[in-house]
Each structure stands twice: as structure tokens, then as C-alpha cells.
Image (tube, rainbow, N blue to C red; front, side):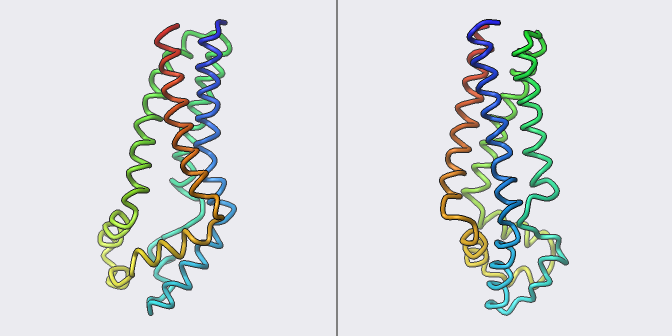
Length: 175
């Protein structure tokens, strides 16, 4: 095993940890965010039950957990195969690190356009009550319920995923 292989695996392990960080945060504070969102909906005169009726959640259930969990597992599997010296490690590094890098671009874009995407999602639901929601205030209330360091964690997470994926891909290219 050479230093580049270890470097690729280290990047992949960091990417794996980064992908599970936000679901863990959402699992821990999602109920608090939901309570804040409910309070905001009540302030706006919107029935809070509209969240449940449309399956809107703030915790790490459903795709909020399985998608990042799958990325984390794939990255970790590639790291283990790299550390074991398997040629599959390099192949999976190319596949999973590329996908993780591109998926992180989509995640970042989604976060930067959250108001627009939530409005569009509410529109697709077809529920007239959801269309009345002041989305910026709704999101601000939910986001405000998470710890103050959440934004820092998100930025660190993006940096680690981009950097770790790039590091793993570069190391794979040089092996």
C-alpha cells in the first residue's frame, strides 16, 4: 500500500463523515425546528396540520437519511477497499468520489435556492393552504431552531466533501 492510496482513503473517510453530519444534526434538532415552523405557520394563519398532511418533515427521515447514508457507505466502502489494496478500491473511488462531488454541487445549489425550491415544492403539492405560506419566514423560523453553529457545519461539510473527493480522485489518478 502506498501513500497515495492512504491519502485517497483518508479523503473518502472524511467525505463519509461529512455526509452523515447533517442527518445526525437533523435527527437531533428536527423536532425543535418543526415546533418553530408550526409556530410560524400559526402566526401566518395556516393550519399546522398541513405539514403532516403533505408529509413535510424537518428530521432525518426518508431521503434525508438514506441518500447521505448511501453516499457515506459507498465512500467508506471504497476507502476500506483502497486500504485493503483491492483494485476495486480505485475503480469505486472514480465512481463514488465523482458522484459525491457532483451531488454536493446539487446540495449546495439547493441550499442556496431554498426559498425558490420550497415554493416550487409547495406548488407541486397542489394544496392551496401551502401556497399561502410566507416561505422565507417559514424557513427562517425552522432554520433558527437549529444551533447557531449549523451554518458553520454546513460550510465545513461542503468543504470536506469537495476537498476529500478531489483528493481521492487525484490520488486515484496518480496510483
